[in-house]
Image (cartoon, rainbow, N blue to C red; front, side):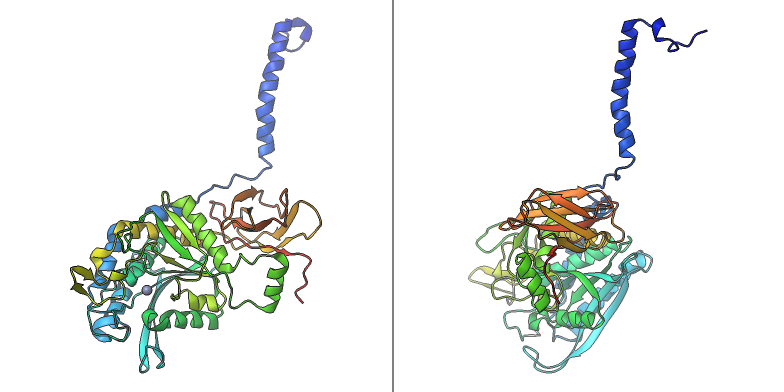
Length: 466
Ligand SMILES: [Zn+2]
């Protein structure tokens, strides 16, 4: 019995056309399929584990922490046993409970030192930061610090006795830190995360200065530092309400920049790409991808006009450090004696905190910290070929743990990245049809689940730093 296709002569022309058409229809997808076997697996736009942390934020837990801290009669740095020290005990207990619930992976410590007399510090005083560290599993030497300050104040910054609830400034920031610890402690991250409740902010950034100094002395590689300070109120003075934004302050200068780094920056024209700004743009990007209906507004200034925050001691020591603060502040409820005057209620009381808003800020933190902690390190030694051509050639070394790298670009006057292109895993160079004179570029590594790392800014290949 002859096989159907043994002889073409035995088949009618219509059958031949049908078979040929069938072959063409099938061969397209099949060859595409076989080509796919040599291309990278697609890297997701979002890491589902990061999204899980973001979606896990609970308003009720944030409110509980704020109200518990605000219930101490005062948390003034110099208030002693019944005040700030009792608040530190409370924080230690809470972090330890979180650690126990996560199998003891969170290392809780009370960092205590004697602060010498100084500005707003009439005599030497024993101060305590409360720290909870979640060790990284793949690159534990890379550290992310997220902080809030647990001390409070009233109108007179030296008044250590009056009622000082400090609900928004800054129990709100500490509540965010606590919530992040709770959500992240049960998971494994590539990087180490330090959840810090620091003291002495109102007296002169004493707690964060001590922490930054100690971590610098220990040669810790801090890749990102984010402080949350006054992040719980959506309604500003004058009744302006803004519940869908948070401000992120980042410095346009790097106080620790060496002459060699300055030379590279000047040659490459990357003045707008300080480590703090790169971190700020990364945080805005994480928020865009994981926190729906809420925006990180970049403010290109280290802090509010003439004001200070706990990120600054880290910035001064050379780390990428930024500050989150609500968009519309209400100064009737900050740094004020609790009182009613001409019918107006003054004081930083828990009823003036918008807990739904605070939960959104906690989600921004969760997106940024969980994503950066999950992601590989930045691409190594990215360089930009300084040739005279209308294109831009970038090259780099792929860091360990990266499933792919992604290039980013923007015009020199754009505040934030405008374009991205995900590249195959092994690719270490790319030619972009964009002028290196008119655009700025960066490269970031992407983990297998989709977490994006901190972008690295390429240096101009021609410049010698010796
Ligand atoms: Zn504050």
